[in-house]
Length: 349
Image 1: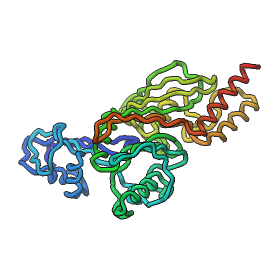
Image 2: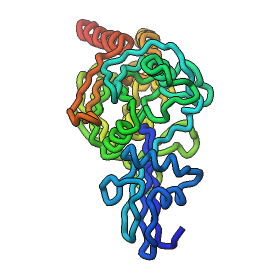
Image 3: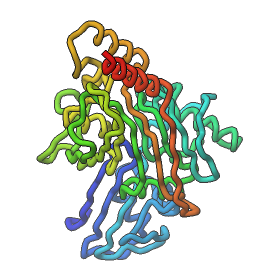
Image 4: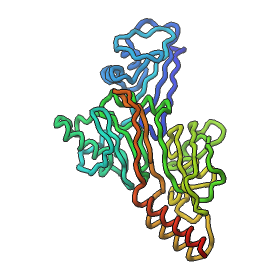
């Protein structure tokens, strides 16, 4: 690599891609861009780089180019690369899918609770991606486990979070959607039940989100310093129940566990979020009847009370603005009803 080459790698959180930026140095001889990029990415094949260029994953000074483009001094090259190491374990499984929308380019699904989005260590079966693979194989008999498309998911939601997720059915759609996620132009709102009575009706949380320094499976908020990635969450109160609050959270960035971490950071851990301590009574009385009521609530919604309620993006082919809504799942709906009834009965006393 030349001394003046600059490579910047920016990894997303819940988005399944990374962004690599290159700056071509002043002494660079003219060279085909596919060859130039291949030399700078470990284990990259010329064919894979060419596929990425054809799909629109690569731009030079903000514009798409062909594989035979000759790089020149000063070029700013950006490559969006989907992170799909888990996809090698995808199996075709006949899993029921709640498909909200589908055309030749994209699918939007409403994910149920207790379903992992993509295969990984300890979760090779029953995943959303396995069900999607089976669905696509029915549409195209030529798709097998050995030649599954390596695009598809450009973002994800946690196993126990419900709601909307978009899937790209072509490489071109994946590139288009990945750019929208990276540029924060995708509209996403979540509904969450959090512990405590929120002080303000609306607000914004700005804090870096990164790996917890002691517990590697968890994430933490870092207001200052170099830890984590910049993250912004806007919230609005929907309904108050004294000891818990129903809120709408709008993501401006998409870091792993962002809402869960940000709400805990401001003192309002998500209800029944076991990983972050929300599966204990954090607000309320010491009376045994209240403890029994909360335990019943945990049984009604035995997961973190978080739902991806809306999703909006620009269609990668038609450029139409699409917007989707997913109603609250039964467990969260019943949970909210229990708190509403509890508050009404308490007011009658």
